[in-house]
Image (cartoon, rainbow, N blue to C red; front, top):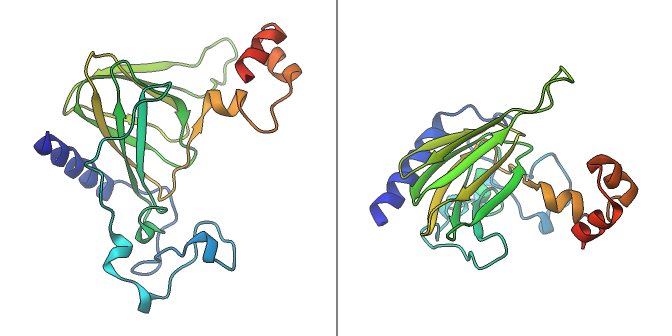
Length: 221
């Protein structure tokens, strides 16, 4: 298990180091992020820490070898390593996640608005896929791409597209993913549409999904 973990980690790290980042290129060696709570200005990203106060700890994170808690309704857990965990990632255009899946666990359909994702399976098997954006021709439908992955297999989810991972096996699964942003963001489709605060109008959702109002009420509940 330890060997598979480090093989997966090294593979994702290598791929990320070669990938073209979607975030703006840095204009200096580093720009270690200042904690938002301590920032006095707001910028598109995070402001820089005084270089004289930067230490090795600003580029370090420990604990990605620890499984996440999958005892929840969807049976998955995401452990992120982005600029909020490693301040030194600020302006570098990369981040990393570990995803744990219980048997038949799901990482629900979601998007990363600011990043392409490349995922490698290190344990178990996953059924993964993504859906294309709306086609220009209204007579066509969104196209779905899917694949079943096993340890050592790699799959790419293009930036901004809805995608998912589902553990089809009877044992747990583990995957690691690199993302082309220091802070890729995530929009879980069901939560955003049916769980926003304040909620989206039932009239809007009823017409959008062409279902009875009671169905929308149940989903929002």
